[in-house]
Amino acid sequence: MKVVSLVAALLAVALFAMLHFSRKTVREEAILKAEQTLDGTMEHIDAILLSVEQSTGNMYFNMYRHLDNPDMMYVYSRRLVESNPYIAGCAIAFEPYYYKDRELFMAYYYRSATGSKIVRSETFGNKPYNQQVWYTEPMRKGTPCWTDPLEDLDSNSEAITTFCLPIYDAKGKRIGIVGVDVTINMLSRIVLSAKPSENSYSVLLGTDGSFIVHPDSTKRLHETVYTQLEHGSDPSVKEAVDAMMSGQKGYKRIEMDGKDCFVFYKPFTRNVVAGRYLEDMGWSVGVVYPEDDIFGDYNRLLTYVLLIAIVGILLLALLSQLIIHRRLLPLLFLTRSARRIASGHYDEPVPDSHQHDEIGQLQNHFQHMQQALAKHVDELEKLNEELKGQGERLRVAYHQAQAADRLKTSFLHNMTNQMLSPVQSISERVGDLWHLETMKPEDVDMMADDIQKQGEVITELLNHLLELSREAIGKEEHHG
Image (cartoon, rainbow, N blue to C red; front, side, top):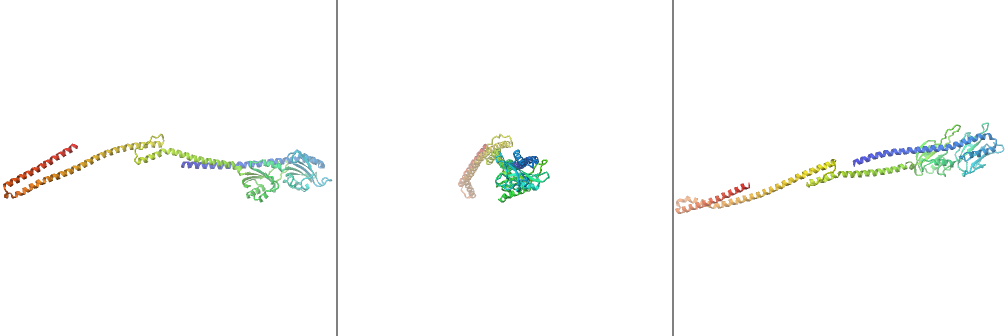
């Protein structure tokens, strides 16, 4: 299990390192995609703006020779709309009484909503043109410029941004403005079509923080990022907005509509082209990139990898346990056999091992030890049986010896008792001999005969005792 734990730890470290660098790579790829999206969006928008600027410049030089002819202004206005598909309308407006018989003069043509017709109009917006920003601002600056969209237009008009080119007379006096419109809807289609992932979207902010381009059309030009912040947006959004409005480049993590996102942003810049007047438009392009779009596949992959790793570790642990158990079966068997042998089962069988490793060698040695032990135990049991037999024989002999000893003692006691009476009789007769002088001769003879008889009895008893002793000694010599 220690080996499995070590392998699992090494696998976890390797997996962590791989996932760390993978996440870093995914983040770098997302940043690269976002930057490419921002650059591509700006390039596309700037190409449209440059096309409009160049078309307007070309028309200006042709128109300049006909400034004294107001009818030609209508011709050039219409021609410019017809020549460039990006142009939604063109207004050529002059200072009051530039044409003496007219207080205000504006030649204005615009493309219909369907794009199939080019329509002439005498008015533009909801107030006189000389009070609208697209006219007043370039007249004040004297330089070409682009206006923020929907300035001075009524709410029913299509959102547009206007390229404004001042008109100078031969003396260098500003006498009018050429205003060329580009629809915000077209810019929106360009910006919104450029997105690095399915759920990401691009935004284009004006100088005042208004949404020039936003996927939610209700916010375009009717709501700024600052009014959105007032509606309770996350503080991280304000940080990103401040960075965008200050012309910074980078990315920040924000919370948008309850989702974690990254916003990548950079100021809108235009390409340097010979003869082009470059002004800071104050616009900023951003890409809102949901974190799930960036790390979604990675997180799902992470989940799968972790599940596979966990299952793999569990399977590895189980497989290792099975292998270890299988490898330890002979040891477990030997342990049980050793217990049974230790408990006295010396004939416990130990089979041959088919393994050629150390465990197999141990089992074979253990088998030889058990066989040798069983042989010695068998020999000891046989010797023990023999000793038991000899002990039994000795016990019988001992009992026989004890019985013989008792018999001998009894015999001696009996013989002694039998000899006691003759001895006492002889002793009495010998005592009577002390009074021999007083005894009659016939009494003396009778006493002598009695002493002789008693002596013969004792002699017979002694001969009988000697005969029994010889027989006992003969038997012992025979058995010995």
